[in-house]
Length: 289
Length: 175
Ligand code: SF4
Ligand code: SF4
Image 1: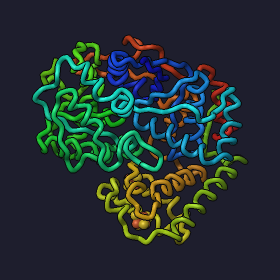
Image 2: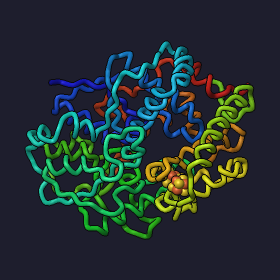
Image 3: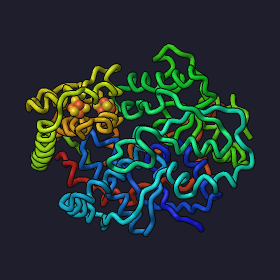
């Protein structure tokens, strides 16, 4: 059965992390997911929660209202966006006064937030909605002989209270997906650690140090590569890897992939169609496809 | 496009400060009743080793009502929003949410907004997104931007004036 979602692209994926969007648009239709583009989305507000939390709630409610207007559930591939939208639904669902206030402001754009639509992220969409069995059926070129570390991203796993796509202390859905694709995975002590992404806004050196520490650990544990599902995390680990390495005095050359890129490779999709030329980490080190 | 400044001291900034104050008071009640200073939040804090943030001390200071001291300190801006403290507190206290409220208060009180926060704020207020389309360098050192790729047009507010009209109720327009 074909399932339809509004693709909520968020700011970073749509203006900079093109590989994620390219690989999502290439692979999900193969799994009978129809992605609908809606004009008019704005930032989810999460990067501005430090400045003004109300603004975050407003922006997220606005985006959810737009999807509702189109009678669609929302697919937010960015972990940060996914948390903002989920938190907005959580807060407005339990606070009718706030909901009324936000709706009063949304009237300026003829929008109303009801809280009817669902919100999914890449990992639960693949693991829970599509399912491991279905994914396994599409594998044409298994990812053989590689051992991968996963990074879910803080916003995808915490806080549990709001309802997250994966378990907060022992997330294993990416492992299950990667294993269906033929790759090996393993646990490592730093798995739940932060990429530093949001700290780029005001303390960039420390953000890089955070990413560098995690990359160095993944490298030292002997993994062949790192897999992520958030454009902020991916930017830190992939595009900014060399700089991140410098902050921890390490020369890093760890291949970093979006989960959807590996999904495509295992499905036999050509490299050029998965945005792999945008990965700045040495993904060529791994021979797949 | 008019310049919008959240730090301007208009009527609604006073309203905003009152709202944040209420939030902080509620958090303070929770903290006073439940936090027993076990420091579990600090032991897992991502910003602890690197930047010396101690969320249990933030909680203790809030308990004592020392809000101004924290609002005026740079330390509140070292939190990476990893949510580990909120997840792991045995008493369901969320230091990270206290930090958000304190940062909101710093901004609403006219303190300088650190780093690129003001840039992304201006960008959201003017075009709806934290940044416009970027030209990125690929592994082979060639550059590309969204328009060069087989991707649909960027989704963003189609009527910026209407979009701003909604947001303006939160942000204050500087005359
Ligand atoms: S973990 Fe919770 S109870 Fe323990 S010090 Fe931190 S806020 Fe207080
Ligand atoms: S959310 Fe902030 S205060 Fe809490 S553990 Fe993470 S970095 Fe520390």
